[in-house]
Image 1 (cartoon, rainbow, N blue to C red):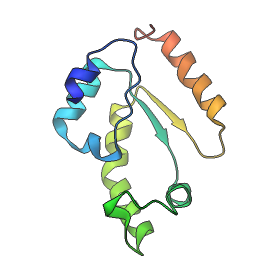
Image 2: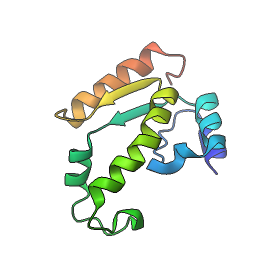
Image 3: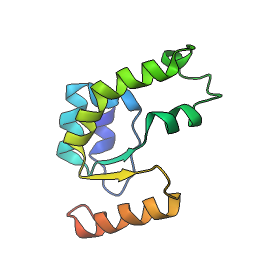
Length: 111
């Protein structure tokens, strides 16, 4: 499914956090897309997910420990795949979108 979607031009494809752990997905994302990593701190993730009941891995009183463990695995992968890393901490949606748009305009992926 990811490979089919990634081959389309002019789309924004938001993957789930664990999608990058799969090596085939890593190859697909690198081959077909401009990868943007919206990086955020563990504290901000905890605040955003405070009331979330849809993520089975985080239905634990030890959410911070689980998020830290996942970030140790995922963050290096995100950084290795990313064409652009945007820190989301203390940034508005508008400013992050502007950074992404600017980077896309400067890349071969501009629509």
